[in-house]
Length: 473
Image 1 (cartoon, one colour):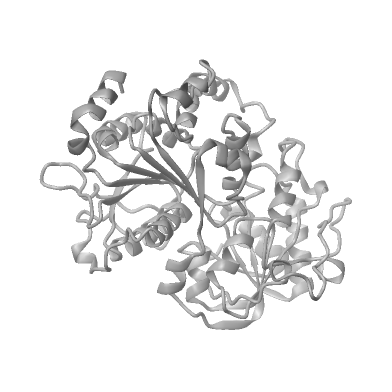
Image 2 (cartoon, one colour):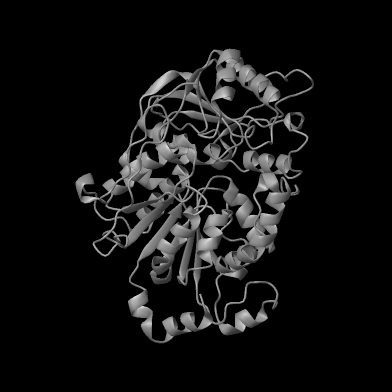
């Protein structure tokens, strides 16, 4: 967008251009759930209404096999533009390829429509021309939006869209533990790089070339995530920082259930505000869940992202299942069918493919009285979503011997930080931890907090119920 276009909007046409309300971009079910949590917290959700009154042109439901069904286009008004919803909240789903992710997104989208939110489904990756078509169709709405909500500031797609918006307010909602790394990089003035890729070169010549070509857009997007208070402040920024935006007045909020310090000096200096996500919407809509007597394990995609060795992971899962008497394994949506088949063969666990984010599944039940997870988002979110229920949530660390040769040097420190900062969970240690895997592997774990420790360090007795969803490997 040209400077003259932005200035023109400031001078005289702001009223006309700012009628677009709030535009949210999501690429995963967790992001969409957290948009609903933010809207609930900000009183931006209209009263629930029937699905018939929600957006027309709802995408067809995902087939039980997990394969994508034929998709309709998004809700539109007679003019061809997306309708804005009762409170001007429109969620744009930038649909991924993965069938399991698409299926969960559709089901969370149904919940959003029940809340009166307009959901626009964009087949954003459906071929080489799809990104251009998607961006072209969203350009007008981006210019009109008063507020933009994003779930993944590391996404190149989202970063590109951020460069097109003149919204005065930007909200970042959680996309899992990556929020912790985003805040760290933002406060440190670093470029935005996913934690498991930090310190690693792009894989292949094409990836390296894409990184170079996209670098200017990434710098510009980062500038959209730092509030500009005045022309004077903009003048204080280095000319080559990519963060100068003359006279911009912008509010940036991080809405998070992760351990983000709202009093962090650097965030305060940048003018970034932090609001806590306590999953109030989830708790008000679902549960309390029915509990089973067994233990449930929560899977992770660390193997799929190249961080953890498959054989070490399988040995660790088997040891945890034996030690804790687990009966079910809740698969991460990115875990491959081949890997899950090996988990089942090695452990005898029932494989559950949740059809909703685990926080929602847990509130619906049934779920085990104990839930054990490796370092992941759920060790932070499940105690909040299940507050007041009697389920114990425990976390088992990933030992350094599990990491692959290609894992980022940042991996061990990041995963340890996820574990150490988790509140209201039990850190497995001593006899609670599984025996070390073969070949020197292990599950290095921190000791459980002593009795009488502050409440924030005590094991959480939170009840988790999860809906046994479709599909086992």
